[in-house]
Image 1: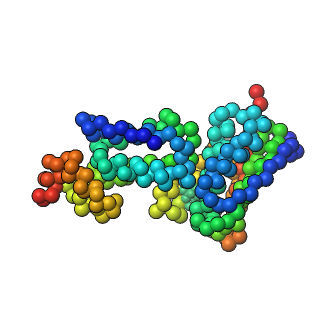
Image 2: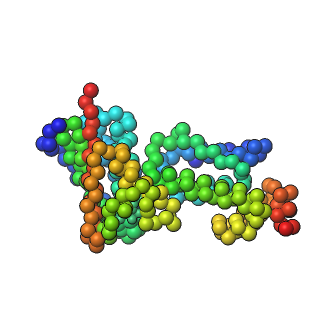
Image 3: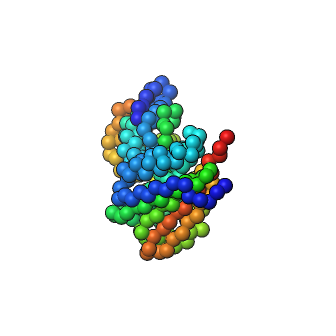
Length: 144
Length: 112
Ligand SMILES: Nc1ncnc2c1ncn2[C@@H]1O[C@H](COP(=O)(O)OP(=O)(O)O)[C@@H](O)[C@H]1O
Ligand SMILES: [Mg+2]
């Protein structure tokens, strides 16, 4: 697998919940150049939806903020970086635990990070409290 | 979203048709809870056949509905339904619907 970036796309939008669908559809459209299967595309859409939703509910807590997405296509894989400048995560390891949620009253399932981790091939979370969070995910798209 | 209620089996079937994410789930949740309160079903079945996208918001939705139906059923058995339902769901109408659809049981619980 090569690590030369073949194509790149940047997206910047307001933290409004109706942008969740916009973000996942746009990223999926960009990813389709790698000829993914329907299942691989669904995985990408779900992971993007999770990360973007987290920016809206947790990072900005309903207030207006900017969400950025950087997508890079490599030969046989796509890397997706989703970042916010919201409140940040104090304890990343705890946040990543299945079923952990800091907002149980909102009927959150606490499965966001677990889904991103299992639907994608790699996931990395970087965060600084008060500055923001960046989630980087990679999906390998196999070529038959 | 569509629903179908079979009175003989007290079975409420909810057929979801929209994409389920944090944005759309709010409206879906309100509709479902409305129907659950209206019919007071013994059993709720969710049909996801027509859903072509769902993220963890859908899991939260299901766990939440599971808790509610469980609570209603438990309260039903305990015959403390009216009181608990008002308190937990915060909807007075539901006690009224209950009277209309299941007069006998409700009478018993109120006599207690
Ligand atoms: N972008 C973010 N900014 C701040 N906190 C976050 C962010 N993403 C996730 N978190 C924290 O991590 C926890 C777990 O996230 P997740 O697994 O998606 O579950 P959920 O969204 O259901 O709470 C959240 O409850 C929140 O406390
Ligand atoms: Mg989440």
